[in-house]
Image 1: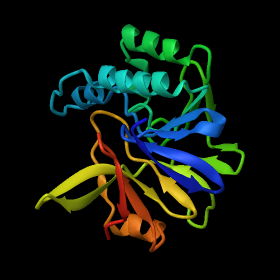
Image 2 (image 1 turned 30 degrees about the horizontal axis):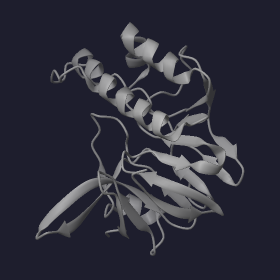
Image 3 (image 1 turned 90 degrees about the horizontal axis):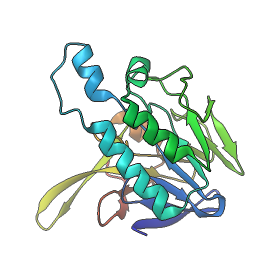
Length: 220
């Protein structure tokens, strides 16, 4: 499996190159900020017309991670849809794909700031979810412990082979993990941003996603 293993709150976790987090002991796959329907929302609000394949691509990649891990539980850490209207406007093929992915497993939608209310797409809708020692929520809370969140779409930059390389990244310290955005049409916030520096401990690491995920000291 293409990922970086690490220990967090006494649990073995794997940061996958795709941007998903795998918890083998609980057979739980966690993703954040899918932002399904973003291309539709752009057009609806008068923005630029983006190629309308983002939801299809995001769900394809999620299906691959589910197949590889054989996950029994999938946790979506909020902002799974770009807004509630985007969720209601999903094409029937995408609704059917979500139903297929949900079949035979527990599926948890965590509420995000883009999708604060429940929608009728199956699964369970929660403000946050606690399992064993870990708590899953959309936005990190100051002072929290053993917390896994998303929202900020973190990315990190390093110099490799004489050039700068920027990738979406997991941010990890002893108290929290912030997941990168999983959605196809999602930007990112540099790890050197004051907000992320304020949330993460001085010894935090960034795990860069991609075909060859790697862990580095969090760039500040």
